[in-house]
Image (cartoon, rainbow, N blue to C red; front, top):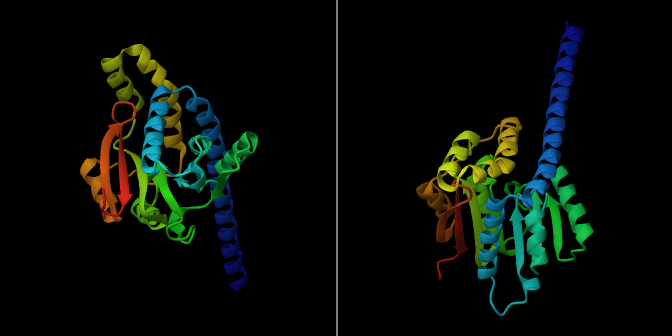
Length: 261
């Protein structure tokens, strides 16, 4: 009986390991594919360029006018393949990009090397694991479109608060709903015409594919009241909140660590 039981147990372990390896491999392939598509979309998708410009303006507004930008330390959480992280570094800030997908971090590191950005670093990790960075390590934190698929978004907000220095600023952007391709296209067509709607397929279609294929977590879609409550519960003071991206499918929150204006 014992050898047979041991054999069945061994088979279960092997099968479990094999399934885990397959899932890891598929997730890695998805990450790499996402990085390649994102690189293509980043330069061509106007709504995303507008969103990036909004976030960059707030990062610049949160930096003291008299400060050397190299002295302003910015952390981008869930940086993906690093396009926006590189843009912030090229704007003169000292930037660290953090992502939980190692394959995307490697893609981002290649971009840093190609652009010779000495004021930029990338790290593989999850901020919610704790002790990733010391308390008050950064002047600003940026997080774009990852809270809704993070397994612990409230904890991520708390950690973002912890790694900010007192008086530091944060920009969070999160989806308020699923960006369905047909409903989104119809909405854009009514507002801007079918030419603009068809152009949005550049982002909407691959995003829908990745959403269907990724490991299921969440989604955590927050409206204005919920988003504000989560951010304030983490300790932040909300300075500004606005609708953004496509047909207002996302909310942008600009917040500060501390209560002073």
